[in-house]
Amino acid sequence: MEQKIVKRIASLRKLLSEKKLSAFIIPSTDPHLSEYVASHWKSREWISGFSGSAGTVVVTSDKAGLWTDSRYFIQATQQLENTDIDLFKEGLPNTPSITEWLFKELQEGESIGIDGKMFSVIEVEEMKTLFAKKNIKVDTSFDPLEQIWKDRPAMPQDAAFIYETKYAGISCLEKIALIRQETEKEGIESLLVSALDEIAWALNLRGNDVKCNPVVVSYLLITQKEIFYFIAPKKLTAEVKEYLLSQKVLIKNYDEINQVLSHLKISNLLINPAKTNYDIFSSINPSCKIVRGNSPIALLKAIKNKQEIVGTHNVMVRDGVALVKFLIWLEKAVPLGKETELSIDKKLHEFRAAQDLYMGESFDTIAGYKEHGAIVHYSATPESSSTLKPKGFLLLDSGAQYLDGTTDITRTIALGQLTEEERIDYTLVLKGHIAIATCKFPYGTRGTQIDILARTALWQRGLNYLHGTGHGVGHFLSVHEGPQGIRMNDVPALLLPGMLTSNEPGVYKSGRHGIRIENLILVRKEEETEFGEFYRFETVTLCPICTEGIIKSLLSDSEINWFNGYHQVVFDRLSPYLDAKEVAWLREKTVAI
Image 1 (spheres, helix red, strand yellow):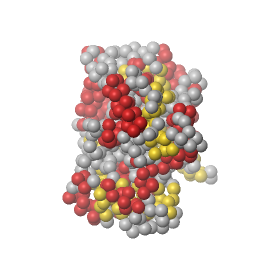
Image 2: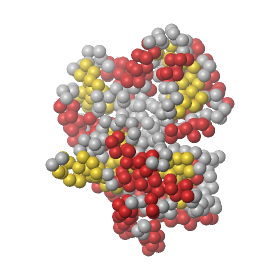
Image 3: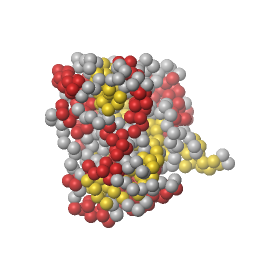
Image 4: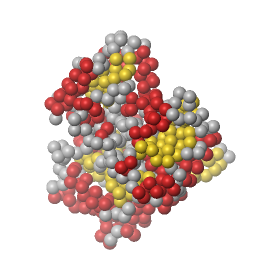
């Protein structure tokens, strides 16, 4: 594989030389600036061999680098070996940004190439401003992958399908009315939507274009009078066409978006410059005033409606039942010495697939045994897959897509004897998890303001984790969604009732172990006092948390009470759907500590 990567980079350099470009930047995204992309747009993975979901490759005439975040430091180090691509660890004090590095590497008058369809308006404008200081030009019109990636997968052509209102809660027409209501408040005549999950939510459509993400590759333009939907014709069945027409949606070819925008005759157009690619932005009719701001769909989608909340609770029961059945199987299987990180992934899939309304995984399962658990987004391969033994921790992060909701859960499971260090770390992570789960906060609170609760116990011992504590979760949509989040860096979105967010502190020690405990939590209104509204989180995930790693003396009485109360809820909600032996196992695993 390493030699293939070296040859691919050599082919790219030859093409850059012909185009008189001194560097080329390849991100991980697609024209919709998605986190997860269809195979057709996995250019960064193809050119580098690095398969993580986040990262950017930069190639110059004599150097190449990959920038990625802390989730992938270990994985990237392994996958870049012998490729001559240097790893730049984002977030560390001494790591230069891509623009800083290129600013030093290039000379005045040279040119950088990027595909303008793969970068946001903000990214390109910032890039151009910085490099202009050194008279370095940024060419946004070139996609060398079209020429050098000979066996590039085709664009996805799977058919879209209708997402029924009984699951969505409200109809497409109602959603469009809400969107128009929000834009009209701000004097906005039209809205361009590029984000695939926002489009799927607004139109009540789903698809299979991106693995684990039920979205449809398309664009959406909403004016106060019309709705234009840009999609490849092959993706529309007769049923979907009829449905879209009934929702007063005008169908356009996916490739027509630039042309339509160039002839747009409206007073103003709202775009999110962080989620709109530069190529499309550049095609907008100059006579149209561009308004920059957040799409109102993001917040409307994040605040789950009544039916979505009902669906979420229902799906947690079915997912919890599947997980309990799996954990019972795992407990019996590990001592036999035949199970691996890959085999247990397949078994977990079997239990989930047996549940009603199951549609697939919500992301690739992370099953990391012992030192592999320290690789935050570890992905087992036939070569790396460890055999599980009755000792140490197994970190299992998984989730599923059901028609009535999306799940995401992590359990760190003691397979046998643990070290004192493992038990201390596990208990500290649990303390952080409970601190978020029991948090009470007033209206106006952002996730950034409560993130410290998850880290305090770790910080006091000189420990930390570099990923976020929580991310929004879609409803039969992307497992990662905004605008809310719980993390150290600034997240401006407020935490509001109806938002579904993960709660997943962790700690990772390279070569030893990784620990993470994750549930999904729903913001609920708790009370209103003279100081305003106060909210709490309702933990909606239903699955026992392993007790074998807990050092009880490190927990306060209130933490123990929450833990026991959560386990009682898990038992009460799941036991009616289990047989007698399974109920007995669950009772044992949820007994008060």
